Image 1 (tube, rainbow, N blue to C red):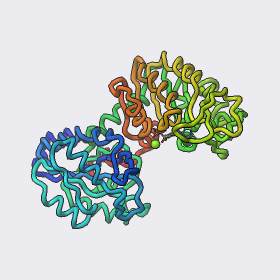
Image 2: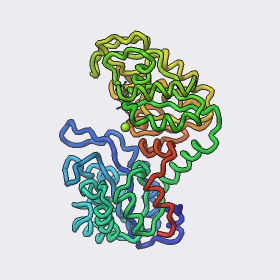
Image 3: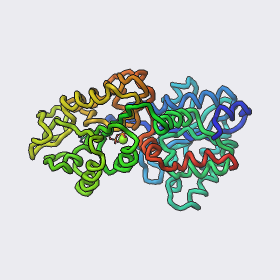
Image 4: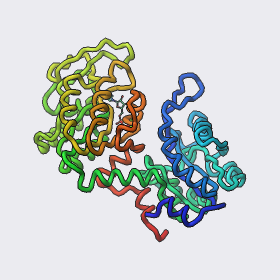
Length: 402
Ligand code: ADP
Ligand code: MG
């Protein structure tokens, strides 16, 4: 796979580079003006951007934000991202008035060497995410007409067969950005001969999202610690009542089978923090997992679980953590995620945090990012990589002939 640094060494002065970045940041809309609550992904995209600017390229950045319905929607405009990117780069980053139309053409035509512009949200075009190859191809043609070269640095989107991730790469000489290269390097260290003990911690909300990765990783890991909303389907599979906690009834059988196959590899919580409702001033009760009251929801792992998971992590040499242990967004339910995040940070070896919400949790809880070996920007992408699946956005970059 060619990298952006090889591209720069070959010379990109004056050349237009279509740079797919992952700028899908969380926004708080409650005040009427969207405010970026975590700019981690924007900052992670800077090294590639800077390398291209310094080499005199004309950089056309494309990105998605949220899930608009395939048509322009001001709520999902990249305007706040353009503003933050301008601040971080210290140069004006104009936002095109559209994604691939006359606005985009005008923004690109105005670029001088070393300049950057941002196209409007690629998901304003229904074709971006279309299952129809021709529809995506037609949009990719319009993208390709805007540039001479393609660089993909949107690690968080490489598992998507989308026009700006996959199809455009088949139309232009292409390379991987620095973020994609770093992510690949770290994830490869997790799959090829990791130092042992190798402990994986999984949390988050939906067990159905993560069963495939559990299945793929079980043979490779020494321990798999399960917390977050997804632990309740496993607890139900063990015969526990889970009250009003998240439960995916249709996955109980699969969880039961995985528990049987895993022996003592899967470690489940022993206590949970329960409350009646998901509110910031909730009255909480801590119970053992065998005594979750009917009317309550389990919204965080309890203190004995934090201790148990901490003991498991203490001796590990390789750790991958994806998914918060509880609803860390609300004060009464942050302790489990904080405890596990702290234990992961203390690991003597390679510690990797994957997942948008997990990375946001690390920053929101004020834990130093430097204490982790790597904080991945891509949740779904890193999980699919660890499952061993082929990721379209990476496969297309590996194809040097195109
Ligand atoms: P990531 O983005 O790191 O991959 P996920 O998207 O899988 O993580 O899950 C994150 C979400 O899971 C958070 O918004 C958090 O509030 C939620 N969550 C964690 N524990 C629970 C729980 N016990 N009940 C409901 N939601 C939970
Ligand atoms: Mg998430």
